[in-house]
Length: 259
Image (cartoon, rainbow, N blue to C red; front, side, top):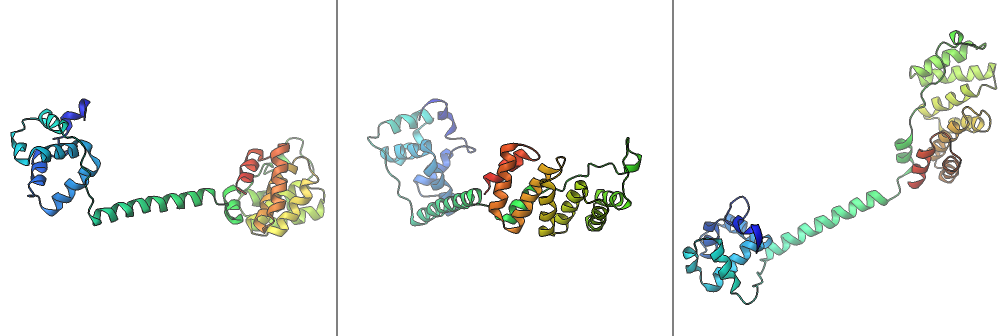
């Protein structure tokens, strides 16, 4: 009870008013106001000390105290603090509040540290690969001969028509088996249409072939394995990306931490 806290005790916005303190001591408060005072006294040492000091010298002296300094002087004469007893209802309320905090903390801890399931991890880290091939292949500088199926597949893929693009990519691969770009985008189209095994087969071939799409295929193969429940294989592929660098190197490291 020292410093600039002295002048706050009779301000209704902070502490109990003089009238509330006196009404509490004389038992003249309504049940609702009595609960409000008791709740406040449990948490406010200033008002609690003031009550104890007046109780010690007699409640009749309360009206004769002109200001808080007088109450402070009265409080100073007490030999030891009086321990207030909580009613059973107050004890149960406090226990319920503590229990609620414990439960909330436990739930938060469980949700934060428990491993996420494969589907949740896939959803968190998967994003469709944006087309990086010119839409009009024949008009690009130094354009190479290109089959119609591949060009149509690229246009369908770029428009988000993944189901329509897949057979076109497959037709392009029949005409040009070495087209790893067609094979890679066919794998993404398979992921978008939930064909996990087929996607993994496309990515497995690409990651062992084309330098342009190898690390990209490794990332998406890891996600395919995760979706298929092959977590150990996914872990190995992600470790390869995280250690050797390449496409999604950072994300690979973050995903490994979730296992």
